[in-house]
Image (tube, helix red, strand yellow):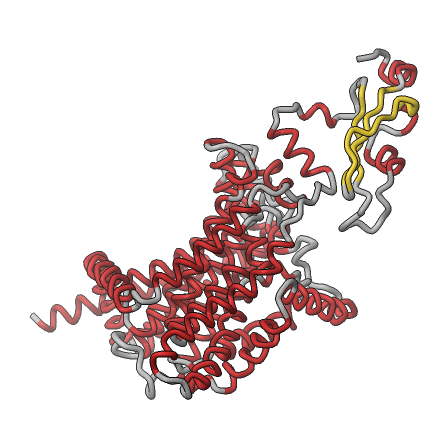
Amino acid sequence: MRQKSYKKDRRNGRGFSVCILILALICLIPVAGGYKFTLSAGEFLAPDGTVESFTPEVYSWLRAVFSVLFLVLMGLFITSVCIPERFFEFWREQWRSFKGFPSALKSDTGTFFSAVRQFFRENRKDIPLLLILFLSGMAIRLWIINRPITHDEAYTITTWGSGSLKYAISDYQLPNNHVFHTILVNLIYHTLGKTPALLRLPALINGLLLIPAVYILGKQIYNSATGLLAAGISAFSSFLIDYSVWARGYSILAFCAVLIFIEGTIVQKQKNRFVWCLLILTAVIGFYTLPVMLYPFGAFCVWFLLRALFYRKFPLSGYGSLVNALKYFIAAGIVIVILTGLCYLPILRNSGIHALFGNVFVRPLPLADFKPTLISRAIDFYRAFTDTVPPVIRIALFLGNILALIFHRKISRIFIPLQAAFLLWLLPLWAIQRPNLWPRTLIFLWPFLILWGSAGVIWIVEKICAFLPSGLQTRFIPLFIIVAAGVTAVPQFDRAAVVAPEDDAPLWYYADRYGLPKSIFDKNIPFSTVYVYVNPKNEGFEEPRTLEEIINRYGPGESFLDRSTEKVLMASENAILYRFHANERVIRKTFGETP
């Protein structure tokens, strides 16, 4: 019986090896056949005999994918031939794990939620202070959530949010389309309404969730006091507040970046399939919002692999072996790549791969421009990070970051510092990629810089408190956290100034919000009245924005206006609204009629 079973397994193994080889050869066909051959094959298989979207650009991308698949499959084939017993035993074990996954997932889900309840029970003394910080951060954000819509917000809303959902998920004419965030805005626009507060709801929710998320990560890596201080500074950080009430996807990116490290900390401590699923979902949402999720996700991967290097000294609990732990890590990575690819498939089909990876905003800078641009963006980043932050907090966070790195082993609960993972990943990547690093694309770094700075500050404060009586120690640290966070918030109230829209996109939004037809912006039809908006402060534009330039460059031209009818309807420091009657003679001559 055993001999028959062995022969059967051997035949099945050979059949499996042949299948792997056939799949490898199929992957080789588009690689070796070239673009024309692959195109003709695609046209043969297509129902209408044409494949319009299959461009040489798409082929180059597919060729790279199939080349990788070919190498992987050939590696598997060679392994199955050289060490068949170990190879097939490994895959049998994976199959058994796969069949038992649903029941294991159910068990791990219960374990996870039990651990969550236990976490909050153990830290219930922190909840009142965390709630105060959270509600204070919410109050500030709600106070300014209805401020005027900015250009990027308006462009996102009017271009993708107000149209069909199909268009929103398939068009990528500009990286303004943070697709997952755009989907949420689109659904809100067509169901709840189009007021600024409603359209900013997804950004607001993620910006608020970031506050407790920073606390949890701080608690996991350092201690409760560090988590609370970091949460407080995050709640009152002017930069994070701005992006929490800005209808873009940046707050989603920041929240996903913190959340993925929270989940990563958990899966390093125990094998929990439910948390691995959450990690996959978090990464996919981050990538589907902004492709620069590659920055924090790559840092997470480096962090996990660095931790795996020290498996013998510090085993990963529950996995049994390093191979098993890496199996979950690799499987999660593969699933993330597949799901992200499926999410972006409508864009790849409609807009092409160049729109996603080769647009002007992500294209590598020339070598000659990279260094000066990098220095300029570093200054912008520093100014954004320190803007409105009192010098005492600024210096404390700066010194805290240095102390948290130098004394990591004394301060932190984890073996591998997150700072090392970010540096090892980001610096080589940026050297290769040569990106234009706008401060907003690095928003994912804000919570971590705040967290590391808070860790160093709390460490010093605890050293000072060691000289105080125990009763004063328990009161001093919470009081210090409230004062430090509150001092951060003081200048924020001066930032909530109303700034009028600077160009066309906000005007499109407000016209749409109040039911004005799009035809009011059409200068190719007869008209009787012209309204001209001018921003004298000229913020964000290099060229002058005078009345004459607006009329001639963006409007119908001065000849179409009767300048004698000029009337100022509104005038402020950064907004002047003029009204003119049309020159009927020129209108009649141009259009053959008057409105």
